Structures are given as structure tokens and as C-alpha cells.
Length: 334
Ligand code: NAP
Picture (cartoon, rainbow, N blue to C red):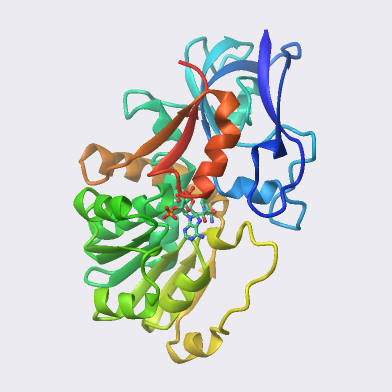
């Protein structure tokens, strides 16, 4: 059987381009005992992949030049040499940017299609949903009545984090990159207020007007000037979850920025970075709660779906530039 795979062709400098990827076709290896052959249906493209394209030291190994791009997938079991899975099962696994994959059964998770569309296993009921759930609950620890600001609010993680804060009874203000996204946040996702960071020059003044009682919690997906402004308007004992810094991922030089530690000191604020895998042991708890809220209609989600594995590089670059609303996915097969 022929497998289409997307490889890393070169390490990008600044924003990746399509020439940093190479698409190849090849045969699959032979199946061993315990192996499962998965036909990939959806592939997730995520901001962390920009880090894997670089060889700078990080919490995970880089993809080698010429290697298969890493990533989460949802697929259908095509053939199984394991008693754990049968033909036709829907599974989630970290199988990379390819159309078919041989995986060891122990690295796959069975997805129940009766709970929600299977694509949600890569979004609201997958890694991004768990990131929002644990980052908000465990690090921001918001209380009812508090003001929570979310940056990157119309993307996958941000849109879930803001809605969870609403479920908890908070006032929620979102920051996103277009007027349509701002409208979506207030009209569909129930945020109390939102603004377009691309048309506002004075973030501090904007935040002051939208958050008259100050900011108690900040769920940071973007970093940079937006975060500098949020830090200036925090309340005493504010909690800041550093989830992502996407405004910095394609920088070729470190930005000069204010030194925030005096503000953190005087506001006695707690700033904590986190990687969602730290909560691995609690993933099922998070997934069950997110599924429950989804079923109750308390959570909503959007997806932006690009067709064809050959368009995965385009989808990834578009996501880095804000081309997605909600979770960006590549549909690999029907
Ligand atoms: P996403 O928000 O669905 O997509 C990325 C979004 O980033 C784009 O849609 C774009 O929206 C925004 N963006 C791009 N450049 C920006 C800039 N210069 N300034 C402000 N916003 C910018 O992606 P996601 O998967 O949900 O991830 C969101 C963040 O969480 C990322 O920083 C990611 O690295 C992080 N994350 C962390 C963990 C963890 O374990 N800590 C896990 C998952 C994700 P606009 O149109 O609004 O600009």
C-alpha cells in the first residue's frame, strides 16, 4: 500500500514556507505482532510543531531534517495484529503527517464516535481541550466573579479556555486577530467582551476599559506586547498561565521588552508556564468533564478544515498566520 508522507525538508528561518516541507510516497513496512495499520482521517496542525522544526533546545526532540513531521491524528483501523483493536475502530495516535501508519497498539487510544464527531479527538476532546482545561483550572484557578483575560482567544485552546471560565462564573475578555473573530467570541462563545489586537495600538488602555475591576487571571497564548500590557493591569494575587507565546515563535531575534518582575512583585502575582503532558495521568478526568460540558451545550467549538494531506504545509502556515477559527485540521481521507 502507498503511504503519502510529509517530511521536514529544511529548518525554517522566520515564518515557515512550503519549501520547508517535502511530500513523498512510499511503501509501508511489514506489520509485526501487536501492530495496527491505521488509515489517517484527520491530522492536527499545531503551533508547537514550529518548535519541532527548529533545533533549538526545547522540552522535546526536534524533527530531523528529512524526518517525518510529528503530529496527532485520528484514523480508522484498517488491519489489526492486536487483540486490543479491530478493523473499523476509530483511534487517536501521535502518528505524524502521513496518510497510513503502522502503530503499536499501546500507542493508540480508542475514540468513541457516539460522543462527538471524531475530529474533536484532536480539538476540544483532545490535546488542545485538555490544555485549556488543566491550564485554566490548575494554574489560573479562577473564582466566580473574577476577571479572566484570554489571548489567542478565537483559536482552539483559547476558545475553550474562555468558555470554561464562563462556566465557572467569571467575567471573560478575549483578544483575537480579526473583527469576525471578536464577534464570534461575544456572540457565539459567550465572552463578555473581546477586542481585535490588530486594530488597537494601546492594549493597556483597551484592557483598562474592558476590565474596570482589573485582571485576576490571564491565560496567555501569545506573549509579546499584549502580555506586557496585561501584566500592567493585574490585580493583587493575579494568576497567569503561560500556555503559549505564538507571537514569538517565528522571531529571528529576541524582542526587547519591559522587565515585568517589579509588577509581579508588587502585585504578588504568580506566573507559571506549563506543558499539558504534565497532566497525562489526569487526561481521562479532563476529557470526561469536557465531554460532559459539550453534551450539556455549555461548550461550543469551531473547526477550520483543509482538505488533502498535500495541503498540510499550507494549513500549518495559515494557522500560524491566523487563517483558522477554532481548531485547524487537515482532512486526509473520508
Ligand atoms: P490556535 O490558537 O488555534 O492557532 C494559532 C493562533 O495564533 C492563530 O489562529 C492566530 O490567531 C494566533 N496568532 C498567530 N500569530 C499571532 C501573533 N503574533 N499575536 C497574537 N496571536 C497570534 O492554536 P492552538 O493550538 O489553540 O494554540 C494556542 C497557543 O497555545 C499556542 O501558543 C500554542 O503554542 C499553545 N499551546 C500550548 C500547549 C501547552 O502544553 N502549553 C498545548 C497546546 C497549545 P489570530 O487571528 O487571533 O492572530
